[in-house]
Length: 494
Image (cartoon, rainbow, N blue to C red; front, side, top):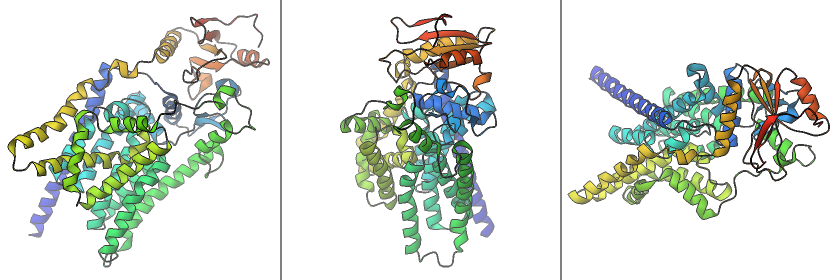
């Protein structure tokens, strides 16, 4: 009997591992296929910042020294002092760096992180429901027509935090049933990924899960008869290692383990007493949206097409404690994001697994409601198929079309294709729109084939040209009509 029980557990674990592997492979293949159709370049400021972090990590460094000519290289979401690095937490940069190191391109890190996130969602759901429903949830994540397009095709981030949240919410039911080292370590790993990617949103997302775990363990007798270290020690160990490393990273970047780069950037570019470039101080990002527009942005992200029609099925699953927990976590963070931010979906990435669980539960509820009626049951079965049928068109040229980005990339490729190194001095007009930024550079600026720099007055540009005397110097005026690009005039003294 004992051997038979062990054999059954081994077969169950093997089937779960095979299902997780299949979900991960499908997610990676789907994103690779989309990339082959519609290869795209970085689009928004955040992506360039994450790519700077990836370039830094891929070269074996945590940060870069401040460049002697750093004022010419100031740009959005990038810290220049006390060191030169992205302002964002390192999680997304580490994922992109993995792609650079392993396959030579950061997009491979995007595919890998999204594939692992989808497998983590399937593993999470297996803790709450039967294998076929867990597999369905993993496949929904892998083939989600919008989530995959954003978090599996851009450098903007989302998959790392999605993976962390799924690990947290997958460890909870396993630890409720039995305190074991494996699920506890998964809980710690999930919390660590959230700490390294979206610490604030991750804390908000994890609070309901941890409260639920404590409550259920208390109802079961406070864990009497179970060694406490099995429940908490592995998680605490993994999380402590991540916290210590993150403190060391902060110290290397900003000089203090308790001062994240984001805070240093805010102090530099939102402090009136600090002299910085005017347009950097005045940058406000994307325009504010109304509450209805923000709700539509997040709702359209998670529930495109017919997926939203699955949610009414939650009425028939309302008595499930798991459903109530997922609804509290998912809807709570989504509501906070809509109320206090611009409603970008990646802010809610830590609860993406919980939201997907609601769709699966809604589908189960609709099937339960239509149990004895063949026609309604068949109609219910078609709902997720209609949504997933949109996968073939999930990444279209119009979705990422941005003439500014394409022009910059075309110019960069043209200059890198020559035998010389180049310095492109960018002269912005007085009415320059901050959304169209050209000054983005590699981690090692001096070693780059093409260096982009802002034109500054007071003889500073002359010093810049002297520093890069071996390069061919260009003047680019993107705000001119039409934009002008040519040799930097020798007679200009700035």
